[in-house]
Length: 568
Image (cartoon, rainbow, N blue to C red; front, side):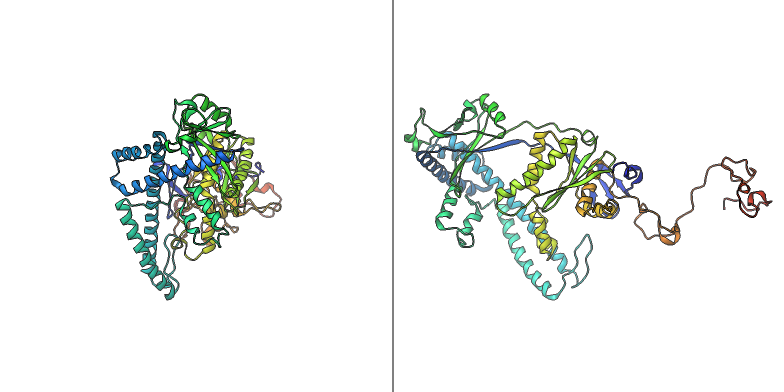
């Protein structure tokens, strides 16, 4: 297939766009297209294992320690939220001193740091909410200012379809404006609202029948979500963590808070669990860290539905060196189009020519979160095995649908809003970066602008044959790969069949986006314009009389040159 598609290389393709500063392309009438870049690797690692073999006493101790520290964390969260924007290092130290008296200095440090991170996350979410409300208010105001029924364009929405919809949206505008004023006031005052255990789980308490939960089941989830059993690591300390210690042979022990020191079954106020921890994934890396006493953070949590306890270990890793962009795409790459139920992939050579057949890696995003995560992971590992087998990089779109799912943006298209909301963009991005870094496969991110539209317009039909039906997603994968390789997406179109460009318009799509007109004269060929060279003596002269045709050719007849120059 690659031999048949050689004419699709750079020499036969054009894309009428100018390159601006920083490698950003500005297409006539279209938005700027950012340059592709190599995605940096992850900055941390997280692994999890199940704590098997816990006794009843072990679970009781975990309940007591988690509930005690959870109550302290709730109290510290209230103190942090009350301080607002006036919080400083002195108040942080005071919060830690208060918690140290009821636990220990290490537990107090872990609690205050976790609460500070939770407050900062709430502030970022609050700012994102303000931006979302601003976008909704701006869009509704624009559409209300237009006449009813006015058509929109690709760049701006039109008016509402009826007076009824106009009236309903005018009422919604007032609601959004009130919400925006309240959100801005909270942002300026530094007031955030955080629920330990989760706001969704809290609201589920009022709809237990719809959630198919009993009160006892909900209470178990609520208590498990509000417990606090996590500690940051410390480099230089024994096995990288003094509060929750895990030895290389899997022994797990906790430093008990002061009120629960009488429950210790080991020296120095520690409690050793009967369960052994063994990390199947990245176990050697974890063992190297704890053996060299480098920092490892641990988190112990309970799955209330299954009645199981899990231990999560996490640590930071040095940033991996990304390969240069030219090196990553030297041998070609695999273009990947992300969709709601599958990944469409096509292999391209370094000239941008599609090779072989497209592949599709499907996943099912229904069911529980763990099931969805497993589906995404399974699809990605098949894609990465294919890329590693050919030694190629992967090109994906730099998607971000966080602010593009509102009804103000997409109107009443509920199916489309549900489609883009269900795409696992952030989860897939995080999984892809971590898995490719482990396998040493470069990832190139490209601007998603017009990849689906131009792919379907310029590549879907040419790549469709008698034995292969190319979909829009397959064509989009080709467009993504070509953009990552630095080649244009749009191809040169064929001239009109009649070859009468004056009557059928321009021969190619290379012309500027203006009204089609008459093509100009062809450029003058350098050299003298004369017919002084006799017939048969030119470089490409052919004697037409040698052919078996009736009559005599014009080159053997006499002629007289006009007085007008031939250049006119």
